[in-house]
Image (cartoon, rainbow, N blue to C red; front, side, top):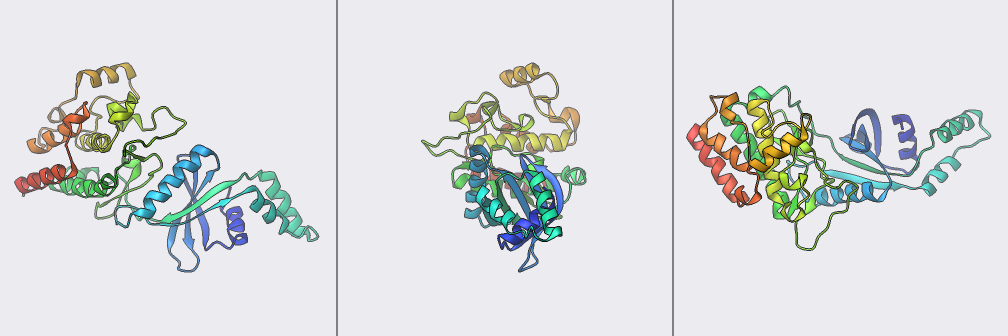
Length: 311
C-alpha cells in the first residue's frame, strides 16, 4: 500500500493522522513517516496484516508502551483495526457515476487490500549506530550509555517483562547517545503461569540471543536473557566481533562454543579496554543465567563503580 491510498483510508475513517514517506519495513509491518493532523507532531505509522500471531504481538506492544512514560521508550498515540466491513464502506463511498472516482475505485480493487491493524507512535530523531561506534568505544561514554540502557530495561524488568530481542536495530540512539528501546512485540512476561504463543519456536535474533533462547529453555528466559544481549552489543562495540561467533558462520561451532563457554577475549581485539569493563561484559555474557547479575541494582552499582574508577 502506498501513502496516497493509506491517506484516503485515514481520511475516510476520520483518523487524526496522515502518512508521508514509506520507510523500511519493521518485521512484518509496513512503515510510514507520518504526522498528527491536529498538532503537526511527527509520528511513525505502522500497518500489520491481521492474523492471530501478528495482532497478538502488536497488542502486547501497545499494552506495554501504554504503561510506560519514559524518554527511553516511544510514546504510543493511536491504533485501530481496518476490517473488511470498513474497507467495503470505504469503497462504497466512491461515486461510480463520476468517471474519476470510478477509475480510482477500480485501481483500489486491483490492490486487493486486506484487513490490517494500524498504529501510530512517536517519531524518534536518531543517529545511526555506524556513525557513533567510535564514540561509544570511549570508556566513559560506553559506561554512561549502558547505564541509560539498563535504567530503561529496569522499567520493563520491574513490570516482570523481558524484551527478548535487544539488538542495535531495536535500540535507537538520540544525538546525545541516550537509547530509546523499540519493537516490544516479542516481549514476554516472566510472571509464573504466563505463556507465549508464537509462530517461531524461539522468537529472537540469533546473533544476540542468549543460550536459553536458542535451546528454547523457557523456564530460564527472563531479565537475565536481556543481560546477555546487552553483553553481545557491548562486546561488538569494543571488538567488531560477536563473542561466541557469528551465526552467519558455522552454527554447530557456535553451539559448541556456547556449551563450552568459549568466548573470545576482548583484549585480544582491543588491548586498551579497562579491565573492569571487560569483567562486567564477561559477566553479562555468562552461558548460564545464574552466573549473570542477580538484579538491576547490582548492575547499576557496578557501572557506577566503574565510572568512578575511570574518572
